[in-house]
Length: 135
Image (cartoon, rainbow, N blue to C red; front, top):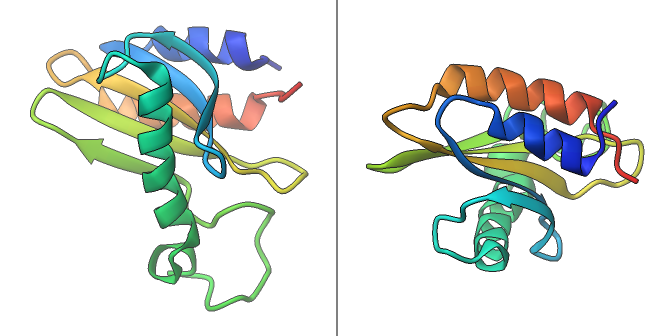
């Protein structure tokens, strides 16, 4: 089971990967980063993507779309699995990490639009999130 550094290295092996990070969406802090940042600063990118992740995880329209309001039947963490933002030059995939404790962590990978494979990135990030060991 990979730790943070190994997980980010595996994310960077995706076709078209330009950068990756593990971010705490409650604080907006990057727990680990690798590669480039879309704005040239990993901390700024972490804070901005955390706002997006927090909105999706906390807004009832997204968080309880299938489960019903507050049924509590799911695992700890948000009901949202991942978010995809497409831009003219790339894709941003955010994958929430489920843990046994009250997790507020997500993986973020930034892919070049010309070389990136969105479907493969979603599958790989799911596998990485499931195997990630937070130390």
